[in-house]
Length: 117
Image 1: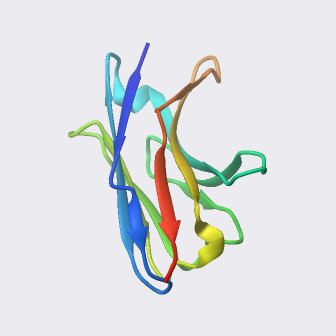
Image 2 (image 1 turned 60 degrees about the vertical axis):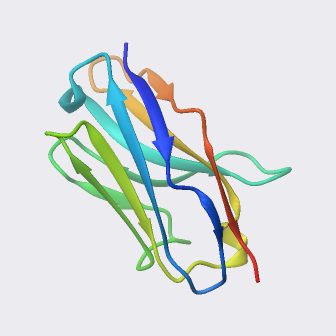
Image 3 (image 1 turned 90 degrees about the vertical axis):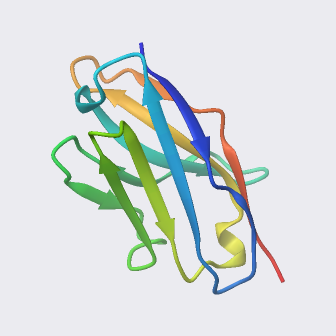
C-alpha cells in the first residue's frame, strides 16, 4: 500500500504561481496513476489533473493552460505546477494514487492553497 506526503501549499496573490509535490513510498510508484484533486469549502472534491505512469495527462477544463502535472518515477514524486492562479483556485489540494490493477485510490493528507490579495 502506497503512502503519500504532499508539500508546497500556501498563500499566493492572484496571478501568481505555486508548485505542489507529492512523494510516494511503500510500493512501486509506476504501478499508480497519479492525480491531484481539490476541495473548496462547501464543495465536492473535484479532479484537477491526472498523469499515467507513462506520462499521459488529463486536466479539468478550469485549469487547462494554467496548471501542469508531471511525475518523476525515479524520485517517486508527482508535481503540480500552478500558474496564473485565481481566487477560485483556493482549496485544499489532495494527491491521489490510483492502483492500476484494482483502481483503488490512496490519498495524501491535503495541502491548503489560498489565492488572495
